[in-house]
Image (cartoon, rainbow, N blue to C red; front, side):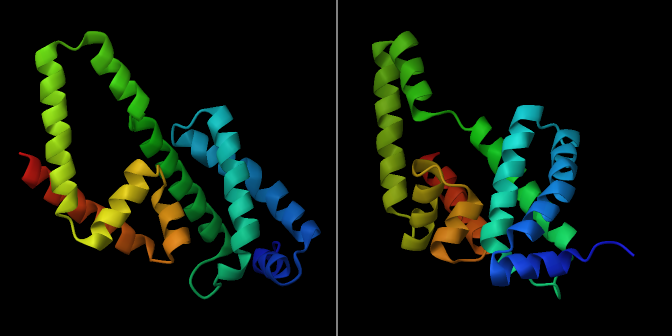
Length: 176
């Protein structure tokens, strides 16, 4: 029979057992990296993600519930969510990049249009319910991933995603 990874996570949770963590890391680290690379993540980023995932396993071991999932399912879910967070951050242009684009190639008319768009967005943001505004501020202005927001606020990940989705829909309709 194979290794009881649940016992390892429990030892990490209860005793901060570094040997159990080292075994878990040694087993799952390469598998997580391969999983991420199969999903299109480059080797360097996959390695960084493995470190982040395993650090999360160490810090969140108390949250693992063997009645809800196996250790491998739990760890791969963390890895999948980290990959999604990284991909989202990569697709989002940094504010400095947006500002630079307008400074480099903007006519006076384009700058006025940009300022008007910013004003519209500011007004639309003010009209959001407080709970939705908080999620938008954390995700887009605070550059926090959905997981990070969940950790900070204690809200379930689904609630965070729903509030952000509803807020973005509302903003789209108001800005049109």
